[in-house]
Structure formats: structure tokens, C-alpha cells
Amino acid sequence: MRTPSLSILCVASLACLVNSFARAGNPNEPVVVGQAIVRADSAKQLAKTITVLSQTFTGVAVLDSIEGRPIYLLSYGLAANQSLADVDAAITTLRAQGTIAWGELNYIGQTGEGQTDSLWLSGVGISEQAFESQYAVPLLGVTQAHERSRGAGVIVAVIDTGIDAAHPALEGRVSTKGVSFVPQSSSFADIGDGVDNDNDGLTDEQVGHGTFVAGLIHLVAPDAMLLSVRVLDSEGIAGNFQIARALAWSIDHGAHIANMSLGETYHSQALEDIVGEAKVKGVVVIGAAGNSNTNDPRQFPACDQSAVGVAALDWDDIKAPFSNFQINIALSAPGHSEFTKVGPNLAHCIVGPVPNGMYAVWSGTSFATAFASGTAALVRAQHPEWPSAATPLEEIRSTLTDTLGSTGAPIYALNPKFVDFLGASRISAVNAVAVGPIAPLIADVNADGNVDAADLSLILALWGTLGAATRADIDASGEVNAADLSLLIAHW
Ligand SMILES: [Ca+2]
Ligand SMILES: [Ca+2]
Ligand SMILES: [Ca+2]
Ligand SMILES: [Ca+2]
Image (tube, rainbow, N blue to C red; front, side, top):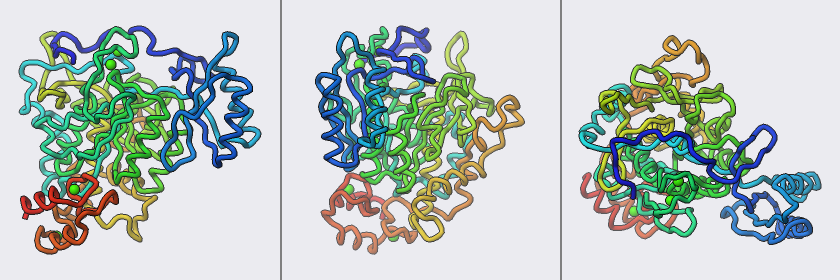
């Protein structure tokens, strides 16, 4: 665990993260050497793929798959005279022959903050009070928004470094159903391993990222349940295969919104497939634009046509200096913090929880993304009837995005150099929830405006139900049980 420090915020860019491989249009993309991803639509095609690759490479085997999808992680070994270009060539041949639908190297995604070695800053004065009163709260109209929605009944998957569920800021809104896709760790908590896994001189430098993001979502949507889908390691890094798998898991476990405060400049087919599936199934994927102050290369999933990309602004709705800006970005939200010679100016800071009950300040498009996810959760909670005839599953994403975009504050007069590159507007929670009806309260299982015997009947009728997403599973634990009954009684 890193010692909190007032002295570190940005460390100069250090050594390259992992082995790099130059690929057309994507120089210096980091990749997990020894792993490739393929989509093989039948067992016969998969077997043929293994056979063909084994003629060229050593150690070819299926390492893993994405549950319920024909997407496989393969291993391979390279001889001294072979390179990753040879793997790419073999994949291209398999695809041309129709043996696989597609294939790719296992490129790496990470937090925008990890890409630029931006670390959170904790210390004296960064308190719960600073968290609750941060500038984003009045800017977005969060307090007034809660008069119409608090996000009840909505599940937000936080696909990140894990969540410290015991942090007081999260008030029991972290589901016990979380998961970890980080190798050698089954805990979905936001913890380090004491190892500088990416050899950049910083140990566990992105621990706290998921907790910080979760805290901001919860600040905006306090009655939404958070699902910790831990996929980024303690340095904030994961292969594409695991990132796509984490999103697939979120879809399968009832998430309405998937917060992806991470990105990569390689346009992964694996991730594109699952983001497309999310859209069709009504799960809204919200991704960070990235922190490289560029419009090229774009980051994914933020710039995927089936996702919702978010850029970062400051306290005056001016583009944050680091924020990427792209035509594919849908929305903007606050994500910048001001630092002076004597420390952070808390009146102009993004403040969030970090493990061990602490609070910290941070800057990044990851945090703009979290505010957008929280606001999306407020609006989603106003529509327990979705999918409906008017809003079918595949239109939930566009309906939500249009609502957030059309109700936000205009930003282009303030950002004339970035017209059309920061999304439709800066989101406004209070204006977004003004459009729809008042949302049901937590524990209003049948969403009729009251918490009463009718809701109790539903819980009893569904008692013991496992897995399937139902509003009777109030705490999103994956089971309708005594914990849900306790919540019902508490909110009667
Ligand atoms: Ca490191
Ligand atoms: Ca580590
Ligand atoms: Ca009710
Ligand atoms: Ca439950």
C-alpha cells in the first residue's frame, strides 16, 4: 500500500510499460506477448486454428474463453527468428481462409491516469466534507436532482481496479456479487500486490482508482448499486481479452450501466464485439476519452459507436488541458483539479474516496466518466419500465445519451477551438432528470411510488431466486433473500 503523500501528483513519464510492437497505425501499442484472441464460431474451427498455428509456433493452446461467446484466448511461443508480425500474418491467413471470424494480438488497455503516471493526492484537509461539497456537485445540480431520482434499482458495473466496499463513503451500496478477473486474485477489493508489475518504478500506482470512480458515481446516484468488476491490476493495466470478458460478465450479471474509466488506442475487435452486444442488450457502456490532449489516436471503448465517450472539463466548463477531444465523444463532464504552489485548491478539485477510509484529489477523464455514469443512472432509474414499446432494449443507450446531451450546458462558446469535439454538452444532472417522471425509491420493488405490502409480497414470491436480475434483489447480491427484506423494512 502506498503511503499517502502531498508531494506526488504527476511523475514524469517513465519507462515503457510492457513490450511494445509496432503495427500499422499503432506504433508502440503495448501487447501481452504470448497471447492472441480469436473468434472461432465452431469447435471444428477452433481445432483447425490450433492445428494451423501449431505448424508455425510452439505452445499453442486455448488459455481461456469468454463465457457464452466463441471468443478464445490462445497462447503461442516465438522462436528466436520470429516476431509478433509473424503472429499477425498467421491470423490474417486464418481469417482469409474463413477459419476464424477475426483474430488479434492481446493488446493492453489501462486507466488514462496510469498512461500519464498521474497519481491521486491525499492529505490534510481532503475530507468527507470536501468530497460531498466538491465543485461538481453544484455544477451538475446533484442535490436538486435527488428530488426526482437517486438511482434506485439501477446496477452500475465499475470495470476497474476493484472497489473498497468498506469505505464509509460508499454506504453499503457495493454489491457482494462483484468479481475479479485479475490473475492470481479472487478478491474484487481495490488492493495492491506490493509488486511493480509493469516495471515503471511505481508500485501499485493505480490502487484506489476503482474506489475513487465508484465514489463519484455514488455521490451522484446514491441509491444505485455498484458492481465491482475488477479487471485492471494494481498498476491499472489489463489485456483486451480480460477487459472484453469483464464487460461480458457485467452484461450477464444485470448491469444497466458499465463504467469503463479505461482505454486503449488499439481498436480491439473483441472489445468492439462485446460493446456492440451491450448496446443490443440495453447496457450503456460509458468510456473515458483519455488523457493525452489529442484527437488522434482515438481511445476505445470511448470512441466505439456503440459506447458513450466522455471528455473532461474544468470548474468553468473549459476543456481540461489533458483531455482528449474527438468527434466520436458524446458528452463532457467535470474532471479537472487545480493545483497551486501550496497544494490543491479544493474549491476547484475532484475529490473521491480511496482505500482505508481516506479521501484524495485527482484529475482525469476517468472521473468525468464517473460523473456521466452517475447521471445516466439517475435517468435510467426513472424508467423501470424499460425496455418498452417506445424504448426497446437497443435504443436505451441512444435515448439516455440524447437525454444527457440535450439537457446539458452548452460549452462551445467557451471552447471555440474544440467545436464538436467535446460531445453535445456538459452534463447537468438536475436538467437530465427534469425530463422523466419521479423515480421509484429504493425498495419500491414494483415501482408504484410506495414501499409497502405489495413490495413485500413480491420479495416473498421471489424468495431464493438466484442469478436473474430482478428489482426484488434490492441489494443486487444475485439472490432474493433476508438482506433484501431488511432493506425493504428499513425503507418501509
Ligand atoms: Ca508500476
Ligand atoms: Ca502491483
Ligand atoms: Ca411499491
Ligand atoms: Ca439480495
